[in-house]
Image (cartoon, rainbow, N blue to C red; front, side):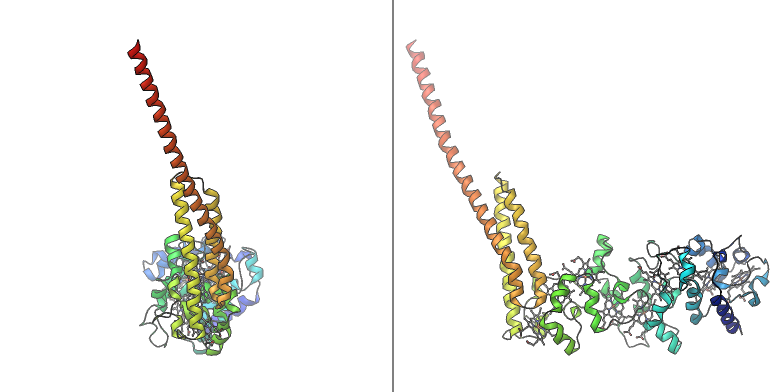
Length: 417
Ligand code: HEC
Ligand code: HEC
Ligand code: HEC
Ligand code: HEC
Ligand code: HEC
Ligand code: HEC
Ligand code: HEC
Ligand code: HEC
Ligand code: HEC
C-alpha cells in the first residue's frame, strides 16, 4: 500500500516542475519531534543533516520524504500528504532523480552541475542488477552518498572526495563476505592501496592521479571493456597511448582478448615502471609471451641496451660536470644543455610503447649526442683546471725565487753597511 502511494507521489512530483519554493519556508516540525523521541534511528538523520548540502541549500526532510512539516503531530507523516516513509532501495533513485534529473530545476542552483546521474547509473552494473533482479546488494545513490550527510565531491569530508572514494567503493568490494555470492575478486581496494596512483594521491596529495571512479566512471560503474581500457589510461598517459595505438601489440592484444595497458602494468596494483621491466627473465612481462630468440625478445634486449647506454652516458656527463663545478669551473651552460638529454631519456622510455627499436632510437639518439658533447665539455674544463694549476705552480716558484733573491740582496746590503 505504502509502495503504491509512494509511486503516486513520485508520479505527481515528476509531473510538476519543482519550484524553488520546494525549499523550506520555516523550520519543519519533523526535526524537532525526531530529536525528542530519543530514538537514535529517528534522531541521527536530524543530527547529521546539519552539515548536508541539501540543508545548506534550504531543503528540509520533506524534500525527500514528503509529508507536511507544518503539522506538529504524527499527522505530519500522513501518506495523503505525500509522505513516503523510508524509501525502499528501488525507490531511492527516483527520490534523488526527481531533482537531479531535472535540468531546469537544478539550473536555479548550479548550472554547471551534471544532470545525468540517473541515466548513467541505469547503464552501470549496479543499476542494471537493481532494475533487472532487484539485487539488494548493489550500490544505490545512498550507498555512495550517505542519505543525510551528502556533500559535494570537492569537500574533503565527502564520501566521494577523491581521497575517500576508494574506501567508499571498498566497503562492499573489499568485503569478501558481502561479495561472496558474486564470483568476482575482492582485492581491488587492497591492490589499489599498493599502487603508484594511490601513493601519489595519499602521500603527495596529487589529486590528478586516478581513483576508482576515474577509471570506472562516477555513475556508469560498468566493468571497463577491453576496447576502452586503453582509452581510460590514455586520458592521462597520452604519449604512451599514442605510441601503443600504432604498435604491433595493439592489434594482436585485441585478437588475443587481453587488455592493452593492463596486460603489462596490471589494473589496480600499478607500480612505478622501471627499465627492469624490459628483460626476458622469468616473471618479466615480455617473457610471458616472447622467447629471447624471437623478434619481440630481441627487440626487448635491443631497446633495453639503448636505454641503458642513454642512461649511462647521461650519468657520466652529469658526474664530470659536477666535478668541474665543485672545482670552481664555469660549466653552467653545459649543465643546462644536458637537461635535453634527460628529456630524451624520458621520451625514449615512452617510445618503448611503439614496440619498435627504431622508435626508441629516434628519440634516444639526440640524447646520446648531447651527453657526449656535455661530457667533452667536462673533460675540457678539467683539463683547463689542470693547466691553470700548473701555471699557478710555475708562477709560485718564480715569485718565491724572486723573494729569495730580494732577501739575499738585502742581507748583502746589510752586511756591507
Ligand atoms: C510528532 C513527532 C513526529 C513528527 C512531527 C514527525 N515524525 Fe517522523 N517519526 C516519528 C516517530 C515516532 C517515528 C517512528 C514510527 C514508526 O516506527 O512507525 C517516525 C518515523 C519516521 C521515518 C522512518 C519511517 C520508517 O519507515 O522507518 C521517517 C522517514 C520520518 N519519520 C520522517 C518524518 C518527516 C519527513 C517528518 C516531517 C514531515 C516527520 N517524520 C515528522 C515521529 C515524528
Ligand atoms: C536528500 C534526501 C533526504 C533528505 C533531505 C532526508 N532524508 Fe531521511 N532518508 C533518505 C533516504 C534515501 C533514506 C533511506 C536510507 C537508506 O536506505 O539507507 C532515509 C532514511 C531516513 C530514516 C530511516 C533511518 C533508518 O535507519 O531506518 C529516517 C528516520 C529519516 N530518513 C529521517 C529524516 C529526517 C528527520 C530528515 C530531515 C532532518 C531527513 N530524513 C532528510 C533521504 C533523505
Ligand atoms: C529537492 C531536490 C533534491 C533532491 C530530492 C535531492 N537533491 Fe541533491 N541537490 C539538490 C540541490 C539543489 C543541490 C545543490 C547543487 C549546488 O548548488 O551545487 C544538491 C546537491 C547534491 C550533491 C552535491 C553536488 C555538488 O557537487 O554540489 C550531491 C552529491 C547530491 N545532491 C546527491 C543527492 C542524492 C544522493 C539524493 C537522494 C538521496 C539527492 N541529492 C536528492 C537537490 C536535490
Ligand atoms: C557507486 C557509487 C555511486 C553511486 C551509486 C552514485 N554516485 Fe553520485 N557520485 C559518485 C562519485 C564517486 C562522485 C564524484 C564525482 C567527481 O569526483 O566528480 C559522484 C558525484 C555525484 C554528484 C555531483 C555531480 C557529479 O555528477 O559529479 C551528484 C549530484 C551525484 N553524484 C548524485 C547521484 C545520484 C542522484 C545517484 C543515484 C542515481 C548517485 N549519485 C549514485 C559515486 C556514486
Ligand atoms: C553497496 C555496495 C557497493 C558499493 C558501495 C559499490 N559497489 Fe560496485 N558492485 C556491488 C555489487 C553487489 C556488484 C555486483 C557484482 C557482480 O555482479 O559481479 C557490483 C558491481 C560492480 C562492478 C562490475 C563488476 C563486474 O565485473 O561484474 C564494478 C566495476 C563496480 N561495482 C565498481 C564500483 C565502484 C567503482 C564503486 C565506487 C565508486 C562501487 N562499485 C561501489 C556493490 C557495491
Ligand atoms: C587505473 C584504473 C583503475 C582504477 C584506479 C581502478 N580500477 Fe577497477 N578495473 C580497472 C580495469 C582496467 C579493470 C579490468 C576490466 C577488464 O578486465 O575488463 C578493472 C576491474 C574491476 C572490477 C571487476 C573485477 C575485477 O577485479 O576484475 C571491479 C569490481 C573493480 N575494478 C573495482 C574497482 C574499485 C573498487 C577500485 C578502487 C578501489 C578500482 N576498481 C580502481 C581499472 C581501474
Ligand atoms: C586520471 C589520470 C590517470 C589515469 C586514468 C591513469 N593514470 Fe597512471 N598516472 C597518473 C599520474 C598523474 C601519474 C604520476 C605521474 C606520471 O608518472 O605520469 C601516473 C603514474 C603511472 C605509472 C608510473 C609511471 C612512472 O613514472 O613510473 C604507471 C606505470 C601508470 N600510471 C600506468 C597507468 C595505467 C596502466 C593506467 C590505466 C589502467 C593508468 N595509469 C591510468 C595519472 C593517471
Ligand atoms: C607490452 C608491455 C607494455 C604495454 C602493453 C604497456 N606498457 Fe607501459 N611500460 C612498459 C615498460 C617495459 C615500461 C618501462 C620503460 C622503462 O622505464 O624502461 C613502461 C613504462 C610506462 C610508464 C612510465 C613512464 C614511461 O613512459 O616510461 C607509463 C606511464 C606507462 N608505461 C603507461 C602505459 C600505458 C598508458 C599503456 C597503454 C596505452 C602501456 N603503458 C602499455 C611496458 C608496457
Ligand atoms: C600478452 C602477450 C605479449 C606480451 C606480454 C608482450 N608481447 Fe610482444 N608481441 C606479442 C604478439 C602475439 C606479437 C605478434 C607476433 C610476433 O611478432 O611475435 C608481438 C609482437 C612484438 C613485437 C613486434 C615483432 C615484429 O614482428 O616486428 C615486438 C618488438 C614486441 N612484441 C616486443 C615486446 C616487448 C618488448 C614486450 C615486453 C615489454 C612484449 N612484447 C610483451 C605478444 C606479447
